[in-house]
Length: 85
Image: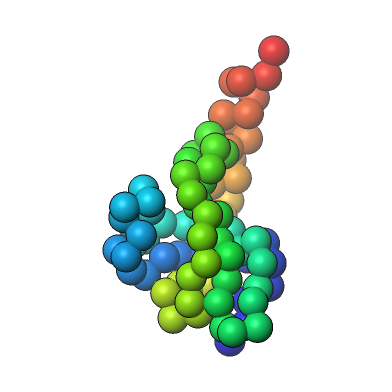
């Protein structure tokens, strides 16, 4: 299954712990490569980037839990509002 840019995915491996990203982390697909790989960005709750790197299609799965997306969006909105002047 090929995912689209800006889709949310869950990391399935601990292979990238040295980059600050553990299994279970939620990331956003930035680019889709022809060789069944994705460029994925992983961010903190405040929106700052932890890391971005290419992963194989087998290392991620799509996030299908709509509640997770809503909670994440609300938390980011709250953080943005707190940071506004």
